[in-house]
Length: 285
Image (cartoon, rainbow, N blue to C red; front, side):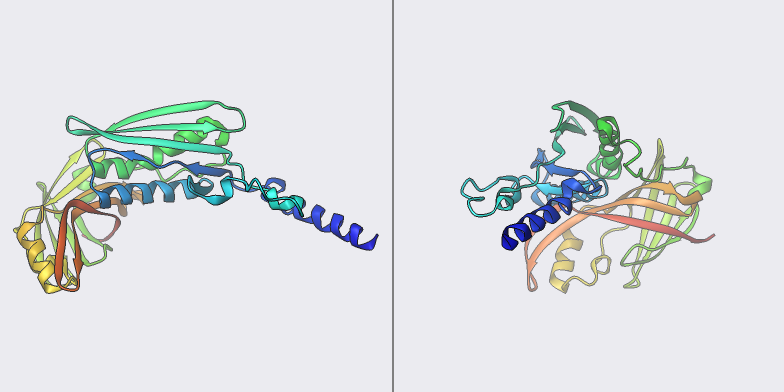
């Protein structure tokens, strides 16, 4: 009798402490993204960033998560063995090329109600897509009933030349970026190399790109042979940035040619395959 009461008590405690019995973030199932026209590394980065953005909204479980599929043979000895997480939302997305643009189509399913929301946005480049994908995800979940629970990302501020001219710091591998009037600039790398830059303001996005010929020292601390091959073959680096925090921060992405190597031997160059989130902070005029 005592064993039976103990078993009931333990079962009740487990139920009360289960995710469904507590106030917690929604469980989000992320289906594999279908990405057309992007390399393997670029696709992985996009998926990783979308996964990261979703993690700010809820608990993300991938489509291959074993806990989504209950074991048909479980539960014979313990009713808790057959318990499995049921996602509150399912996210499906596709990214494909349309002329020179990237089209991001997103579908959000509320598994409890069966209601579906669809969103489509067109971006000029992969960098812009990565930079602005968070906002489309937040809009989708706000429409899906999580408005007030989704913590919105900081909204970009109006950008103009006067607000970006000056000295910026903060990106790994670059000691200083100085933007000047007339769309000109220079970046000083940790290796001592200097890169001449140009920039334009496109809508509310600051687009910066490399003007200088490539140098091995732009790719420090890569092995010398990999850096030399990158310097010979890589496309110019580009940045796509938005202005935040009262004009004191520029945040966005840097896009460069990636490289796969073993030791000092280069296996493959990946144009546009090295996309990373960056933040510059104002360091004085």
